[in-house]
Length: 217
Image (cartoon, rainbow, N blue to C red; front, side, top):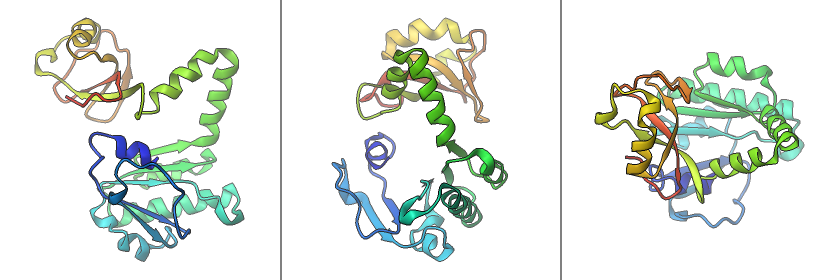
């Protein structure tokens, strides 16, 4: 996660604080290690989150903590507590939380958490795809690794494309940028995959398959 965050064009120069109950982080080849700080403490406590400067945070990522022999149920409970505390302290933060079981997803959604990843469901989908057609898994693995190869990246909507249909801009956009549009993210956060006849709006973002080194335009 840290390597991918620091490899992002928009986040590579941002300060990252890791709150964890460990004295040191594993050895990693981070692109920008000087912008990483470890705070050894309990991430579910409000005073610890304040010490980590959560009031000024733009993004919060809560990883399921199964250390110290915790069960996945206990880890999910800690994730929920941490996420809801962060949202209470700083409602403006973009919060992403990992859960092992979908039973707690509703609590996080109601609490204002932006993104919830259910690892058990995701792993199940990947295993099913691997059994049905292994190329799907290889494709997804590359697209989900922004540090190499191709990745899914958002592009700001060029003014000259506003009002045109999605399918009509695929070829000219690829010829201009080398990126392949596959979906639209609307201003309300809704994602439309391959919406052929959808007319593009100025506040939409084009979600594209692009080389990892490409910048958002």
